[in-house]
Length: 404
Image (cartoon, rainbow, N blue to C red):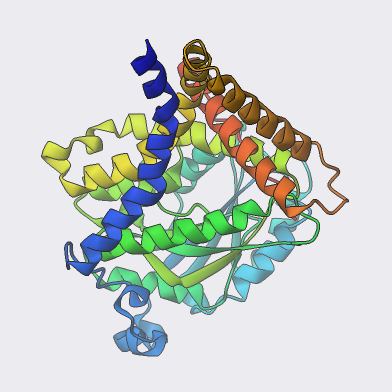
């Protein structure tokens, strides 16, 4: 019983240590040893300047046709500025289609989109409301571009970034190109300051994976895919950004991260909003991983399967094993009374984090409290996501995160 208690307590720490430290270390060592194939199509990975990487694509006539898709639900407060920012992107207008897929919006979103019809912006109204992935499935039937750039209404793609993404597809082995997220917000007032460091860490891990050949999931904020990958119809409760990299693998193509293709991602204004977002994205991620579970077979997929298990599954197993760890502390306390002291500290930390979740959004939150709140929000969201998956609570209906 003592041995079992220690194992239960150690499980989430072991998964956490491997997923967030051991796995990146293995990636870094592999890149130092020259294992894998460099991402020839991503200028950022080769270290060349953007001008040199453009090469034969300096002439506007050489750029392939693209479609920029934006799924939207009741976005009247920001869809105008979103479209204006997309129209300002550095890409030949005659080679660009901008498509707004309105998921049965009930506010003024559709009317605002129609105001831009003269500028070539197209509206696809999806009825009845079916969620983000369903809207993307419907959009697949009307896209005209060879390359499809996916983004959201709250994201701002920097003007040069679309060309940076498209350059990656000069390599015929690349099927998906993912941009680099830059987390932005009011550092003095936001409780969700921990998100900025996590985003930077995630971009670094993807850069290492790219140097070894392929990432295992794209950034939902800004990524591009070949039209054949984009048109694959997915179940409504799957995440297309994650699935796109897996579809590319099934098509014997790679997914790469392009660090020069940058977009700004406003942090959510509260930890509560961030926790709701994480529950949704993790539950969709777990459903997506299960749908493509055959890609986790190392005997058939080799290193890609190990990367998929390490980057995705092991991270999510941290949250699954937390309740077992708490049970292990209780059992361990029957033999080692000091374990109850550790359990009390854990519960105290959870209470501190819970206090951060209830912190007024208008007031500046101290950094230690913000970090504790971010940790509690992430762990709670992970456990709730597993619960939804086990209870088969489908989440196809989409409620976008209202970022500032």
